[in-house]
Image (tube, rainbow, N blue to C red; front, side, top):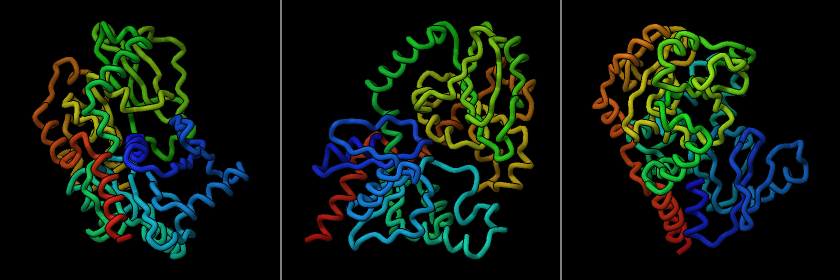
Length: 349
């Protein structure tokens, strides 16, 4: 959204948003064209293809298979915004799961990556990861910082979000917020329980904390008001970064959320109960215990002990943020659009 707003601010061209049903962001505004980019919405799908064929800049934020069969016009730029400021697990050409895929599938992956003209990064660490993951050379890397992180440098926006969430969840005025935001595992498609022992957390922490749960829609956990004024399911809340504003302690595992949360310089705990199995199946970029900026635990009892004793090393969080958010300083959107359109103007001349 920050990239979109800056694009509209700095340029006078028509902005077209192609979104799928998985996208929960409301892009509707009079000046924009918003289309459902799915075959089941046939006429909007055709319009989407038309705009892909006639646009000067294509911004994507994930892996999209349609790029493998797309040929853009000369001087069209495809910019990969990606959806994470950093990476714990391997992806792209380094993802261990693709080793058993067919030669045809591997060729398709490479065709998608070959369509990328620029990938934005917030750090040299992420630049190196993208070079390996997408097979890119350094000329394809834009060191603008991550536009999405601009939010964390906007004091007015932070205050507005905090007020909005306080109105929605008044309890956070009285108690500290623990946000549990685990990575979705492929085998959890029909899981109905969490590895986190919520009953134990409720008993030990309910007087001082509330627990916000941000879990994948496929994980159907029925709490049935067993933990009144302690557990709140915020899985459907539209923007995870907004939730981070009111979060006093983040519990995660292999997600990319800690990279952005570290900008707030608050404590984190990593509940990696399946660390060995996950590392074997997904692969990490470096030693997990050395990478993450907080204690690593494998059971709820250890988790509660750390929370109760406040065993956090905030210096490690700050160092982690400096390393991964190296170029993200609050003006990433502005720098990105200036760079892209300045480069285009020079090319046109």
